[in-house]
Each structure stands twice: as structure tokens, then as C-alpha cells.
Image (cartoon, rainbow over the protein chains, first blue to last red):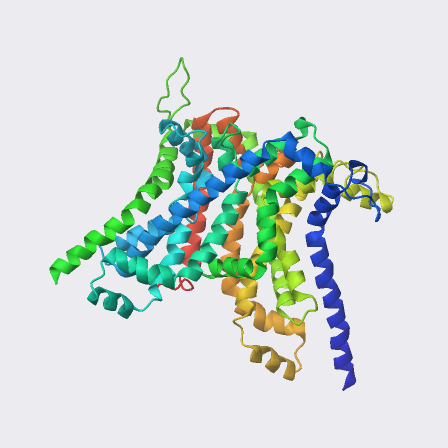
Amino acid sequence: MSTPNQNRHWTYYLETVGAWALALLWILPLLYAFWSAFHPREYAITFELLAPLTLDNFKTAWNQAPFARYFLNTFILVTMILAAQFVLCTLAAYAFARFEFPGKNIAFVMVLLQLMIMPEVLIVENYVTMSKLNLVDTITGIGLPYMASAFGIFLLRQTFKTIPQELEDAARVEGCSRLQILWKVYVPLARPTYIAYGLVSVSHHWNNFLWPLVITNSVSTRPLTVGLAIFGAPESGVDWSIITAGTLLAVAPLLIAFLLFQRQFVQSFMHAGIK
Amino acid sequence: MSRRISQSYIYGWLLLMPAAIFLIAFTYYPAVATLAKSFFSQGTALKPSEFVGFENFAYMLDDDVFWKVAWNNIMYAVGTIPISIALAILMAVWVNGKLPLRSITRMAYFTPTILPMIAVANIWLFFYTPDIGLLDQVSAVFGLPSHNWLGDPDTVLGCIIAITIWKEAGFFMIFYLAALQTLPPELEEAARLEGASRWYYFRRVMFPLLMPTTLFVLINAVINSFKLVDHLFILTKGGPDNASSLLLYYIYEVAFSFLDQAYASTLTVVLLLMLALIAVGQFYFLDKRVHYR
């Protein structure tokens, strides 16, 4: 009787060690970035436990590139996209969830198709559109293609559908208009979905790179990712410690938010994925 | 009654209108315009753009770089998808079980997901640097010679694949974790009482029950293999000799470095076709799973 039990214990320890080893491997690049950023450059590639700590790399990185401006640009971008997405997706999701109108099913399939054909694929033609609209090298230009998000519409529609029709009927008897119902009944009840979608959207656009790279060409519009790519380019001749310090600066707000609200983040990505 | 119905028509479309305008302007119009442009030559100051039929496509079929990039993209997908899905399942099973330090482990797995690809590339660049990079430092311990990982056409795509696996596995883990939490615990108990091994239980019970999740993750992974090119900008710029270039990166180069929008549109049409194929596949395989209510 004891053999299978011991057997289980033996594999249990093996699996635990395996899980930890994989976790260590997964966090290693980030740990390295911290090591290199907080130590003088001589220690960037040699690992001594008692190497002196320093914040100079962060100071140098901060002074070498207009990070403050990049932060501001990214902040404006992310806020603008999120606000527009909330409005556009809420209205469209309400239409899909609670109204009957001709062409509804076709329209819904057209929306879902955008899950496949993301704006990244259409950079060539969208660039042409932006130059016609005179929006090249503006933060609005970066944001526009992402504002009607199929993902957001789908997510909110699914949530609105779970809200009992009786609540809407009751509100209508009270004399609420359709938009008032949306604002006072649906939006508050869908708050968890808004939070989940908001977190996913903010982290996506904080990290987005290709389209912002294409559409921006000056310091006053570049988001952090594009600024960081220019900062870290080998041509710019910056050394490792400073590059990693700059990199950590750029990811710090998101990383800190993630560490503080880990459960919320994981659940949001989960919630957003299951639909 | 009919007045209410027509009122509902108007309301429905009015609510949909703002989003529809954006979708048309930045998704449908550009998709159609891309297709149209692929049949025209690239206009220059001396020679305006003109209709050339399938000439751009013929050029593409003769373009060695296109075939190389397409092949790379297939290898990129084949290299990243199975391993990242397998790792994602493993991670999810571990983190879902009775593991000591479970939440720290889960955090470690998930962290790469929230880092931008550009930042990730900056950090990984150090690992791959010849001589002083971590990879060479480790291999030197075993007496192996130094190697220019990103400079060698034989290893560069593998390096790119490794980063992508690292970035994606933790993201996919989340979906498996969600699915595992819906499996009734009685299943595993019953299997244990019957004397089934953990591996047998996984193979015959858990994995089949996770199939819908695997399909969902698979489709996301395939889309990502066309979309994730950010790290190329830092690490290789598609080189050496296009050995690590991918379709979307090549489109970017053709459009914004070689300034040939007509050919870039032709390449984009190929990308759109691939995505349309995935879309059809998804509706075909997954429509039973997506709950339209």
C-alpha cells in the first residue's frame, strides 16, 4: 500500500521543483534587467552578490531621452482610446443586445471580422487615410483605428445580454429614455466587464508599437514604445545599464500596477478571453 | 405595434452608427482599397499609377524574398505554437494544483504578458550578444565556443521563436487556468480511485475536456504569428539576409523603406487572405462553442 503513496510524493516534489524552475526561467530576463539597471556598468555582465547599488543609470537614461514627454504622449493616447472605446462600444453593444433591426446579423458578423483583421495589418492604407485627414504625426492619428473595437463590442454585448429585460421594462415604465436606461441600468451593472476590458485595453495600447511607429515622426507625438525603440537602437551608442534602466522606466507604471493588482489583472485577462 | 418596431430599427442603427463609421473607415475601406491598389502600378512623378492586372502578383511570385519571408512565417508559427501551448497547459496544471508559492509562480509565468515586446527585445538582446551575452557566458562554462546567435542565419529565427514562446505561454496559461477551474474535481478523484496515473488522467480526461480552449488558443496563436513582429525592429531588422524577416515586417519595409505602396498592398492582400482563411476556419470549428444567445 505504501509504494503508490511514496511514488506520488516523489513525483510531487519533482513537479514542484519543475514548476519553480520554470517560474525562475520565466522571470529571469526581468531579474536581469533589474540587476543591470541598479548596478554600475562594470557589473552589467559580471554577477557579484555584493556589487554596489546605484540609481545613476536611471538618471542618465531620463536625461538622455525625452521620457517625460513620451510618458505624457502614452498617457494621453491610452486615455483617449479608452474613453472613445467605452462610448462607441457601449452604444453598439446596446444595439446588438437589445434592439431588432434589419441587417443586424450581417452587421454583427462584420464587427466580428475585425477580430481577425486588426489595424496592424492595414498600416499601409491607414497611413494614406491619415495623411488625407492631415493626421499624420498626431496622437489622434495613432488612436483612431483602434476606437471601434470589435472585441469591446462583443464583450459588452455578451454582458448586456445577461442583464434581465425586466429591469429595462421597469425603467421604461418610470419614464426613462433609452439612453437614460443605458446609462443608469446597463452601464453600472456591467462594471466588472468595463474594468476587465479597460485593463486589457490599457495594457495593449501602452505596449503597442508598429502602428505608432509608422504614424509618428516627432518627439511631441511618439509614445513610450517608439521612444524606447529609438533610445535602445545600437546606433545611439547607449550602454547596457542605461538601456535596461530606460526599459524599466518605460514599463514601470504597468508593472507596478500589475504587481499591486495582480489578481485583478489575471482575472481581467481571463474574463476577456472567455467572453 | 409597427410604430414601435420601426422605432426600434431607427434606434438600433443610430446606436450602431458611430462604431460603424469607425469600422468602415479604418477596417473595411482600407481592406477594399488595399485589394484595389494591388491591381495598380506604383505611381511616380513621371509615370502615374495605372491598371496592371495581376502584374504585381506575378512579380510577387517571382520575388525570392517573398517566398523566404512566407517560409519564415510558417516556421515561426510551427516553432512557437505547439511549444507555447504545451507550456501553457503545463503551467496551468501546476498553478491550479496544490503548489507551494503558487501565486508567486503564477505571477512569474504571467509577467511577460504585460511587458511591451520592445522592452522585452531590449532585454533579450543582451542574452544573445556574442561573447559577453548570457547565453555565451553559460555555454562558455561548458567549454563551447562563442556564437553570434542573431548574426547567423541558422540560429536567428530560433532566437526570435524563443522570445515569442516566452512572451505567449503565460498569456495562454490564463485561458487554460479558467477552463481547469470549471472541471469538476470529482473527475480527478474518480480517476485516482480507479488507480489511473496522473498522466493517464491528463491524456484521457483532462486534455479532451480542454479541447475547446485549445482550439480558441490555437486560433489566437495563429493570428499572433502573423501579427507579432515588434521584436524584429530591435533585434534583427529582419536580417541577416532576411533570415528572420516575417510577412508583416516585410510589408512594413516595402511600404515605408522602399516606398512601394502598390507592392506592399499586394503583400497585404496575401496576409488578409490568410486571416480570412483563419476566420472561416474559426466559424467552421468553433461556432458550436461561441454562445450566441
